[in-house]
Length: 187
Image 1 (cartoon, helix red, strand yellow):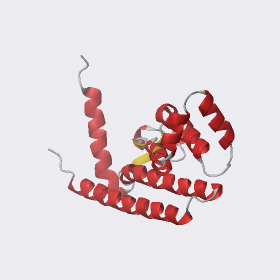
Image 2 (cartoon, rainbow, N blue to C red):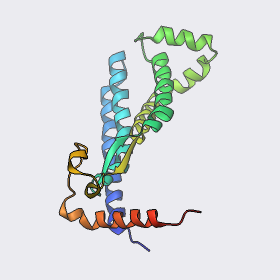
Image 3 (tube, helix red, strand yellow):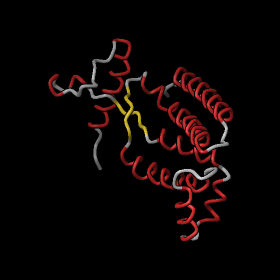
Image 4 (cartoon, rainbow, N blue to C red):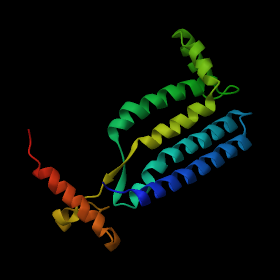
């Protein structure tokens, strides 16, 4: 059985730091306030940033273990874009004052019979903004770097670099796992 002591410790510390940063961002949003349309959008952007920080904490530790960050197209299209549309719809319809698109979205919501749910959800602007940032952050994946020994130098992607000497045992373990997986019998 493999031990994950250092990994768990690093991940726990990263998550605690991210939670502290997210809490600080939410406090900053309370200082901005929501009295005007501009302040409302600024505060909601800061709260969305707090959600993004929490999601990003899950992949930060991956950068140090030879993985790289990428935007997952499937997750972006199937999860983030619908969340963007729904959260944007509610936020625009229920923003304070007479902000951008407020009357138009409000009218469309009424015409579609969605006004009740839009107003009910609009009471939770901060939760919607936090969830929006969280889903955006969860659209990111940590994926393995290209195994550079198998790729000729002229075909290597621009971002690929030779792993540092400290990562060589980790890279060697990954190669062993890949070799074992390719040699496994197919049923």
